[in-house]
Amino acid sequence: MFAALLLLAGVLTAGAVQCHAGEGPRITQLAALDDGRVLVLTTDKGGVFLAQGQGWRRAEGAPELYVHRATASRGGRVHLATSRGLYVLRDGVWDKTAEGAFAGFFPDADGAQALLHFWGLGLHVLDARGMTQESLQLLREASAREEALAREEEELRRQMAQLPRGDAATLDEKRAVMRVYQQWQDVQRRLEEVAGQTRAGEPRPVMEGLPEDAFVSGAARNGDGWVVGVFGHGTFGLSADRRRWEPLGHGLPGPWVLTVEAAPWGGVYAGLYGAGLHVLAPGATAWERVAGVPDDSTVQGVSFGRDGQVLVATREYGALFSPDGGRTWPDPGGGPEGNVQGVAVGDDGSLWAGLWEGGLFVSTDGGTTWRPCERLEY
Image (tube, rainbow, N blue to C red; front, side, top):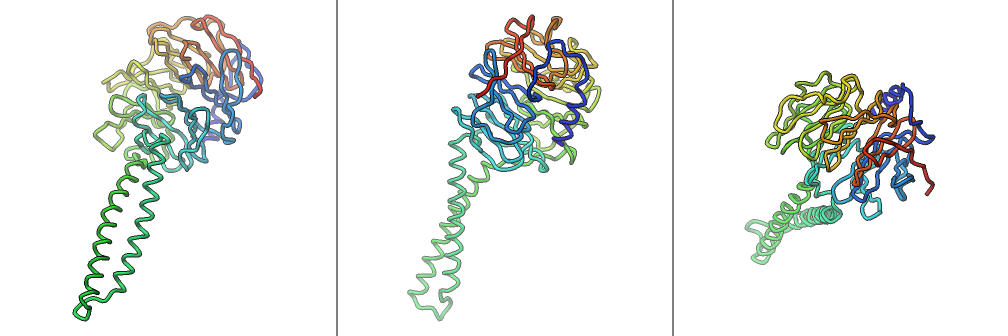
């Protein structure tokens, strides 16, 4: 499916490039980090870059793997979903936090919960606190204790089976049986406690109600629940008190959802292939089209700033920008046109756009002017 999406992205490269895409790897995604830098994800193996100021360079120590999705979380953490595991950047060091083939990692804004998308295994929900180094260490320790207790239980079972029982047993032998039995009961109690600890840290599958072949193109918190976009099938909602996804596509003009993002001021935005940008307002059950984005545009990414900025990546119209939560959309003028795959609003209000054709562009004046960023070596 990843290869199919890359092929789709390649097909969507038609259109003139006014701001002239630079040479370099094809950019698929951007993400603004808390420290002012912007993460740039490309199709290259190990193609994770960091941009700041006038240039962008490879992220030192990033895994030499193909990355399917990058996610920036509160607290400065960055997660990379790869087919060889889930990686996280903490304090400048990349660590593998989970084994498996991951297609996506979608944390909520508070860092309390996340959706994991496993290749071939669908969606799982996880207490995102289980992804911190401290809780992962506790989980590993609990798992080790569970294995040790299981071995101890097996040994006590063996001892009980060998001890004499019944009327033929002496008083000392009966007391020995009782001591072993009491030890076995204590091990059983501790084993149940530690097993509960390990289960609490494990992802829980949440696929009921979704298509069996669901490829999740985006996910976002919606109140206490979740909204996901499934490419080719539309959007689905999961409420906090239920474990079944329900269709949530009323108001959308089609099922080809490319991205789903939550705005910091509330509401969920969905970008569609050839059908523009749509918003699900807080508490609403139907989507509404965002009027400032052309209704025939292919929206491939959306990013939000803390002061109401909305930056949209499109195939046909380049990067579109609204400074006021989507109420007005100034003419992009000389902005980067072409197949804009990724966008990000920096912590300082800077605007970033990455092109499939290659090239990273930045604006520091609200989208009035854009300049290319130089690709630097290590």
